[in-house]
Image 1 (cartoon, rainbow, N blue to C red):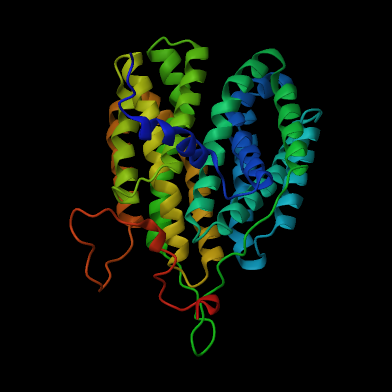
Image 2: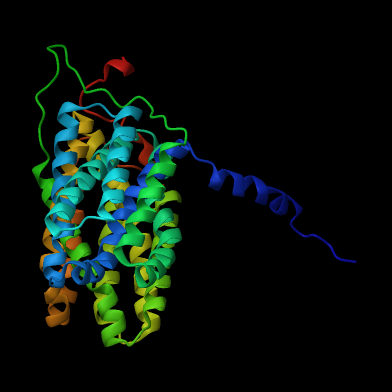
Length: 401
């Protein structure tokens, strides 16, 4: 006769699974964030096909990435100053992104394609800013938004790889357009964002955290420089198949999903980020495909375990959270622009790159850490509850009086 030694634990499995899958964000918002993330993810797969389509070099075809990231930077930088995060902003941006992807599938010239990618980048920037700005101070909502990108990447990476081989850029852009149009049909609502802080004399002057912005750009440069050359390292130096690289990219996204959704407050978010540096270095220097894959998966988990909370921390400590979040995302966009330009050093001088990457991650974690406060620190041995970040602001929000 068999005996169930742990009946209570077994009965809790369905409840735990339900809690893991439950989301606070609406399906439309998560789908919009997923489409934005997959559009960024698809860019490296598009460049070889675009070079063949227009008869240009891969470097010239890579201007589509520059156009996207540049307009993305402008959108996130300006959105916090002139807009409030709302469902209307997300829907308008998602429609513009879907139309830009649809027309990109049939763009007859490269200049027209670059113009369309500028429009796409603006839509992506507004979606990203609105999704994150509406999540400030709401830990469950923030985890949903942070995990939407890794989840979409995990599902879409194998599909995009097959489409790139069979249908080229036209097929990829059509899939992205269909995904955007489908997301428009889902329920989309945004919670009320945190209001700007006020004092007895009215709104305080907005102060930029230049230190934090430099830190965000620093580790994003290292992150993007290695990421764009990751497939070349795996296939060229280690002799791995392209399909294996695609599966590892999906595993990286899956690990990022876990890092974004699980409670990682056992360590400070900046500590998780600093630990991502050695993982990136191992991706550059791994002597065996097994170590390469393990480092790539660890990279995804550590990065997503730290970055979403760091962004929340930077924004919630500002007297103007939405504007601060836009500046933070713009700083990361600058890093995404500079990183690929330095990616050649990853292949040409791997040892130097393996030293520089952890240093940039460490510098980024130090610069984005909050300044010391006068309050006494938390007791030793007790995990920190990161949900207190939005409440410990210098000024009092009108909603909290």
